[in-house]
Length: 525
Ligand code: MLC
Ligand code: AMP
Image (tube, rainbow, N blue to C red):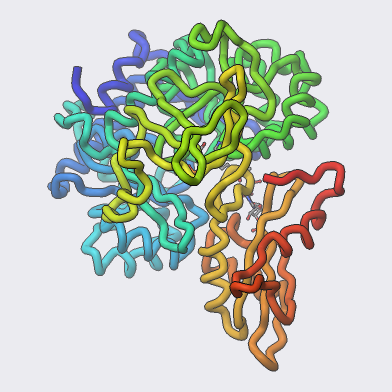
């Protein structure tokens, strides 16, 4: 069988290509705006792949996309891998400075943006010789206009499994984002494992309400449904009440913990609404045991929590049904991320590299066919992050209990997970420090009832300067993605430092620990 990821996914499409593959739902009013058959999906993907082929891009060319969620955007991803090029999804929240970095680093040959962004993206694309195509949320733009003139037939490009399919940028602890290089084989291997472990079938109907510029929405959810030939109820954005309205037509839902807490706040969420549901899956951030318990009490369903990352795809999962590898255990245990997935080797080692015993806490290291090829144009960084025997150091800290369940207890990196998005304080501090009047700053994560965790900025002004915290946050919003902007800013005279001169972030963290939550709901993650 061909190694092209698109061929692998298409092999899972149902025989009846006139069946509905995707029903698009507008979150604003819950209306169905369009239905796509499997044949239409395949045809548009072919047209876009033919368009890319007609552009005569160099081998391994990158196609970057910073576009709103749409089925057309999903087709652009599929078309890029079908044509043998490398897809580079970018969050629409990214602003100029972020985009300038990604385009300069990845040097894509094609950049797809909405017409509204064209004016400021073209000057960033010109120096790297990238052509700019447009795709708007309403299907208009040069990409669709040109694709529609192409043939709806296309033979997927011949690739080997080791060829790159996607680059996913993950923020860096030192401010420089790293592009995780994922191959056709990496992505296909993970999709196949999840298909079996979660019991996907063409009878499934997935509510897809996640963004598609990250691994959760693009691979775990969308690839999963495509490979299984399962229908998707495709929300243009997440809205808790609208999603609950559609649960009685669905069997599967995937979301970040914020989505679960927001749905729990809706009185319409009850057992009746979940009567057709087979499985609720959560990930990207820790699901609080209280949320797990509240969900089970209200709906009768134990949420299945899993763990993964851009570099590796999914690594562990609570069981969907009895796991024979683990004495037939089937319990979905709150506060854990379950067992290593079949084919994933996962070990925990202490700082000296010694294996940890049961319940001992250490760094999580992984190896398997799903683990990425390395960081784009960063061979040194890649070498640092792998052990000599080929395990990737995830940067997550965890333990494994006597029953084999893995728990994440912390992170070796200074990182905040806010509503499922990763925010690196070092990156945000760099932007704050560049603002006029700022001498230095520190960003720390504190618990938040909606987003799980959010950033708080502590800023020291230059001598004789007065800083207005609100104005500072407003100007920061022009530079960085909105979810990275700290929710509060405090101006102080001096940052607390230890005798080595290092900023004591733990002191700041405890000072602001209860800014958004009462002590009873506060947690440390
Ligand atoms: C939105 N806002 C956030 C935020 N999302 N602030 C902090 N953290 C977040 N995650 C802020 C915006 O800045 C804005 O502020 C205001 O909320 C409204 O913005 P919005 O876009 O309308 O928000 P909303 O639609 O409510 O989005 C919330 C959300 C979204 C939870 C639906 O954040 C989301 O889709 N999260 C999922 C992220 C995801 O897919 N992660 C997977 C990564 S892959 P203002 O001030 O401008 O009004 C991964 C690996 C793995 O981690 O294991 O899966
Ligand atoms: P990303 O780099 O955006 O892919 O984010 C990956 C990170 O999200 C992981 O390294 C973990 O720190 C975190 N993560 C993902 N799933 C979970 C989970 N279920 N519980 C805790 N952290 C998680």
